[in-house]
Image 1 (cartoon, rainbow, N blue to C red):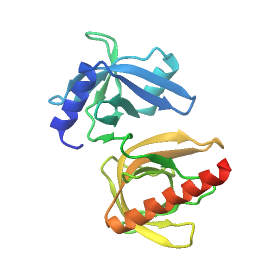
Image 2 (image 1 turned 45 degrees about the vertical axis):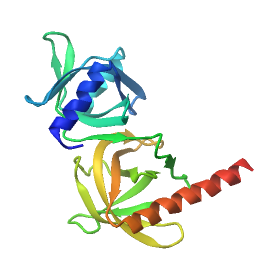
Image 3 (image 1 turned 90 degrees about the vertical axis):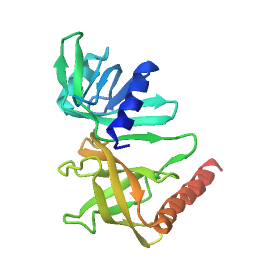
Image 4 (image 1 turned 180 degrees about the horizontal axis):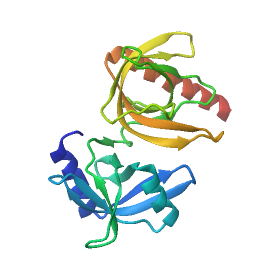
Length: 229
């Protein structure tokens, strides 16, 4: 969702239903859980309460931009909140800029599958753009949603469309799709290195997207069967 009216309605429903926001910080493996207290689209801000986890609170300010998620009757809601500022009046809380993009994923409808670690989903992102860069697709779903990992020096804003992304398939073929960035956050990999992880949506030619997604869904299904036998 990019309409401020629609985003405002979803966020207001989180307050009305008393649903918690969750943000996971992988630097120190901390979990931030708090309530959304106020939404003001007209003045371009939202207010979130503090978590009981003091380390997680500190990492909110250190990150400057965090991904908040919540379970909502419409599905799994996520949005990026940026530029946190301490607020003392009327209560101690954290004020963020109003999110520009909000996504809702119906996980009960579309199964999400993680690409097997041995499978190489190398991707030349923005191959049809000005500055192509190397990335790796690490998560896909039947709805066309997924995630990719890339160098932390590259800044991708929500709503950015990476055109002509070339994805190397394990069978030696190459497919080309466009990728729309929905949100991004900095993460720490298992080897201790830093990276960025972007939630994204595959867009463009339905046949190419279908080929990409179906290939890995089938491939993972075969791997699961082998592992279970």
